[in-house]
Each structure stands twice: as structure tokens, then as C-alpha cells.
Image (cartoon, rainbow, N blue to C red; front, side):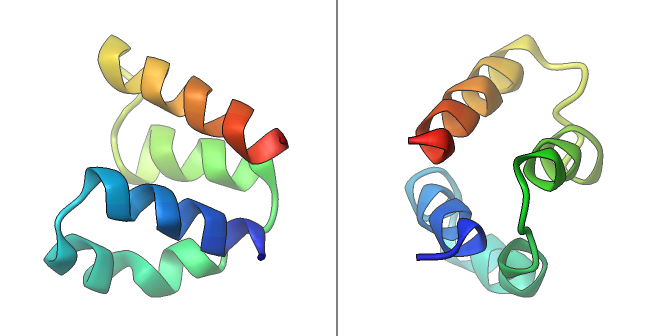
Length: 65
């Protein structure tokens, strides 16, 4: 399973189907943990939300496994 596919699985746990459909192509393009971090911090706007930062940290830990 590619990194993008793993992120897509995560999205299925936390987002609605419409959002996943809209973002699927962008998510599947993610190939590095740095890209995942940038996507969530800036493209998704999680940078200033501590709750989402915790979620992002947990996601990156899961992706490293």
C-alpha cells in the first residue's frame, strides 16, 4: 500500500465521503511524510488548531510503522 493510500484510509475514518471524493487525487499524490505534513498543515489549514496538530502527529506515527 502506498503512502497516499494509507492517508486515504485515514481520511475514511475522519472525513465524509464527499470530501474524500474531492481530495482523493491530491491525497494519492502524497509520497513522503513531509508532503503529508505540508498537506495537512497548509492545504487543509490545520496549522493553528492544536487538536488537529495532535491528530497529525498521530497520523505520522501510524504512517511510519
